Image 1 (cartoon, rainbow, N blue to C red):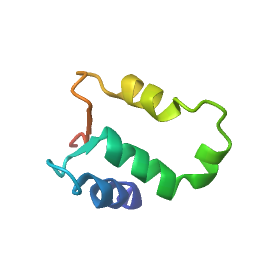
Image 2 (image 1 turned 120 degrees about the horizontal axis):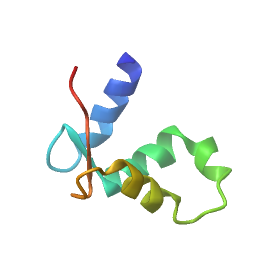
Image 3 (image 1 turned 180 degrees about the vertical axis):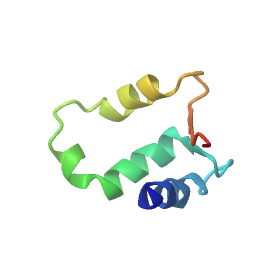
Image 4 (image 1 turned 30 degrees about the vertical axis):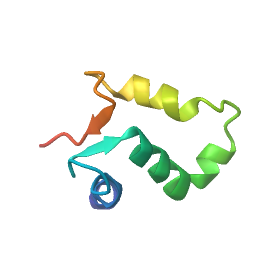
Length: 67
């Protein structure tokens, strides 16, 4: 779990709020940390679809939830 949180913060601190991932930060995280996962996907819109599914309040950011 600690690794996941540190990885989130490594990318979320690049733009704006360090507790949120922008779409660009999410894409960078997936490209660098989950290379094999992305390379196996056939859908070029995968990151957009993931963002839509995960972005509950539709502000184009993913928030790290607290405890």
